[in-house]
Length: 341
Length: 138
Ligand SMILES: Nc1nc2c(ncn2[C@@H]2O[C@H](COP(=O)(O)OP(=O)(O)O)[C@@H](O)[C@H]2O)c(=O)[nH]1
Ligand SMILES: [Mg+2]
Picture 1: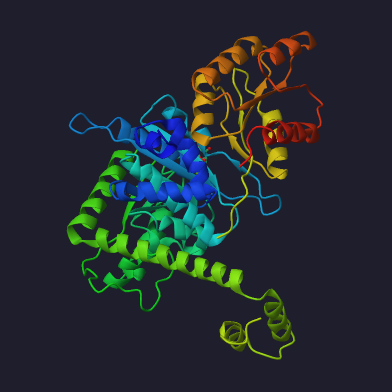
Picture 2: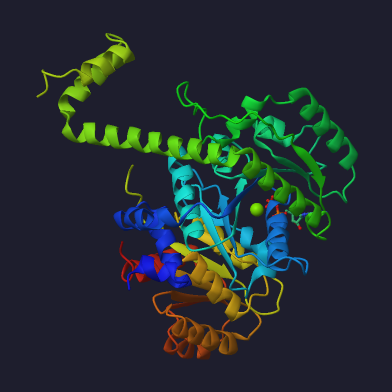
């Protein structure tokens, strides 16, 4: 049996090795995703993003524990966690410490935690994360929690992989709301004010309510949540649904588990909304279209570089740097047929 | 899309009941600065927890920081688990306070390197690179 079939039949070692191939974007990883892709589309993807130290990992630990040990009338779900931390820009290495907060999940074969370093490249990270998530989805994890540091576009892009995005805030981070600074408030389906045991929680909540009220997104803005990048002008599918979802605010104390069952309820409601309104299909389509377009762009550039004359490229680049031609003209010249070689 | 080179992935774990993880953190940072991806798992990890994390994270190496004197209990158990789980490819390193006479015994069990206080982190980096490079080329 090959490694993909073994992963599909529940072999965790095979799955772990497959994730490495997918993350490293090897041929083996790409072929694996081709086999796995038809099995995807069942899991609920939950993004958890916010500034460092707001309690995301602690909250992810609680959420996963809740899904594993739900109230009696519900059945436990299999949970995968993808925890992304930044790579060092200097060495390319990373210290990935999210597991420290997830001790409660050790020894449970219904949980699989994978730490990932952001490895620098913008599109590459979103792409690798998407692949990892597809693999978890395909082998039967019901809930996939994706933790990212909400600090920039890369993290926002990953958060947009998710069906439901939680943006985590905490009081005591100064007067500013971190999410507003990072521009991630608009991707929140649910705003979590964690560390509700800390002073200043009222101020934080009031500020967030004010922001939400001011923002009051239109239906079309809301649906922008689905894209991995800003949507291209021609990227609007024709069947855009019209209903909207108003972001909700939930207080939690992740260290105590307080507010977690309410949070799970909001997540379930959001999922129901996505399914009943048809937004989930819309999001899926936008996400896959964006991924396809990114791949096309990269493959076309790679193919062109492969076929083209490096000397000519360098000549055009030189004239561009000397301001003899514009970037637009440079690209035109490089793409023009006939005078190649 | 470029073929990303395979990063060396290492778990740094702190088994046993003692509560100091300063040394473990210093090593974790040194490995990061050498370009490795270090999964830090925190204090009081059992051999079961460490090998499970190593499996999920698909690491090339495990670094144990042991100050409690329990190395002759922890290490054999860890090596046994690695064998039983099909994780023999993972290289194991031990740092901390290990009496000289125990070092040969640990190496017999399959430990690649043992590091006492005052070890240069560069030496650890080089040992990991050499041990991992020879078994896990992608
Ligand atoms: N007081 C308080 N501390 C918390 C709460 N949630 C997390 N913490 C602490 O905040 C710190 C950072 O938590 P962590 O989950 O690692 O944050 P992350 O960086 O967002 O993943 C840890 O020391 C946690 O114990 C909470 O609800 N209340
Ligand atoms: Mg974290």
